[in-house]
Amino acid sequence: MATKRADIDPQQTPASLDECRRCALWEHATQAVPGNGPRHAPIMIVGEQPGDQEDLQGKPFVGPAGAMLDRALEEAGVARKEVYVTNAVKHFKWEPRGKRRLHKTPAQREIDACHYWLDRETGDVAPKVIVALGSTALKSVLRDSKATLQASMGHALEHEGHAIVATYHPSFALRAPDPETRERAYKAIVEALRDAHRLVARHRK
Ligand code: SF4
Image 1 (cartoon, helix red, strand yellow):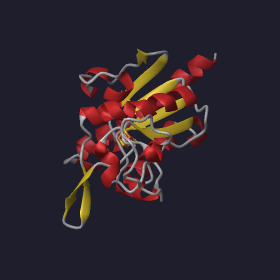
Image 2 (cartoon, protein in one colour; image 1 turned 90 degrees about the horizontal axis):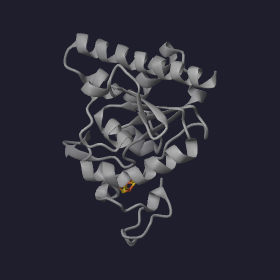
Image 3 (cartoon, rainbow, N blue to C red; image 1 turned 60 degrees about the vertical axis):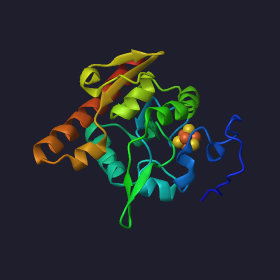
């Protein structure tokens, strides 16, 4: 677990993710959670922010949403080695509810502040296709605070030289109130991953 320091100047360009003070989310998180996967993975998957388990383990997509993503990747025929996974926001934002820490959606200013890191990862990995899971990820990837899933799903978008595929976040497919919505959301995620795979294959021809 990273040591948390309060004496770092928030105006300075952060030397590392753990030293980032570009917004206030670092303060109540256990640690920053960087992306994970091969350096030049053709597909980058962007989620919203670390959840409870990710925050404790320091790795993205290791909780229930991660397990669903793994299942969807397998069903879509996408190998894990083809995929780099990360989040739009690198520290866990939460509120207490009894003994539990409940997820809280990041504010636009936090998404904007953390785009610095997503931009660096996108430059390093240089993916052919970016899959945005949920509207926070989509807003960050497109740098458009008004972007909506509704307007962006079902067709690939183009942004700064990357193909962008938008779909639901696995958490939505886990927590939607009725089973039909959960099933429909899961199928949409699998279909989006298939689309991403097809776009990569087309790029290689
Ligand atoms: S959430 Fe992002 S911008 Fe905010 S402190 Fe953490 S790493 Fe920095």
